[in-house]
Length: 284
Image (cartoon, rainbow, N blue to C red; front, side):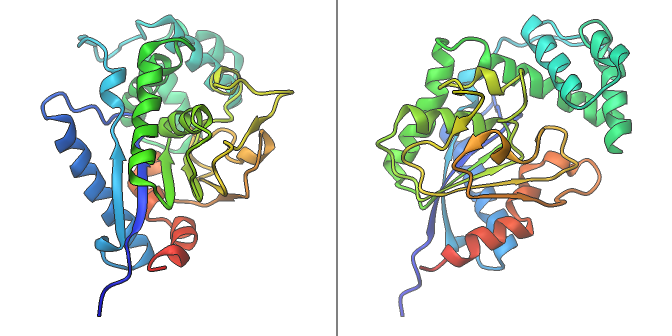
């Protein structure tokens, strides 16, 4: 008896995936296998139920190595601006928002950690990585690396013809823009996890294509869009995308983390709403 076909998935990662030591394909293959295991664990099936192609765009956003002190401040004005807009969206008090451009990351992270009951040191490290990579991607609408990241996703979708595109964190921006840039690509399901797409000023107004009348839209080739966010995830602000985007079919919130895992891809990939979304599609 032949086994049911695997669910074809294109995975689009978030921040922190750049691996300078290994070949791109080796990195992509490793993460594809890990994502298949996480998805399978949530659904309660074997990893071979998922055929994951991993759109590894991180090398296009790489910057020269820099040495950063333990009390580092951003060396990128756009990253500093995005940080301030993020703090403002979270409702940080004026001294924190206004000081976001001058105070060390440690102090900014301390406020975020207290608000969300997170580890201060790990929060600072995450903020440093997140805003540098997001600023790199959003720096210019015409930046070649932004187009290259989009094309990496579009190429995987065209080649793999997935049943679902699963995008996490910064990857939701890249996937959104890639699918808008290529309306000919047909995607039965777009699943966005821990997405900052609707983050006002910092992200939303910088998207391509730009919002129309303060509304974004589902890419033309996407048949169904499901968004999942942990309400305690400070990256997914606001957690419900349907308030800013037309065409979001399901907007789900759930607690996926324990400890600092508020934004980890593996927790989103194996959470109950992800399993409920993908489970019925497995083995079709």
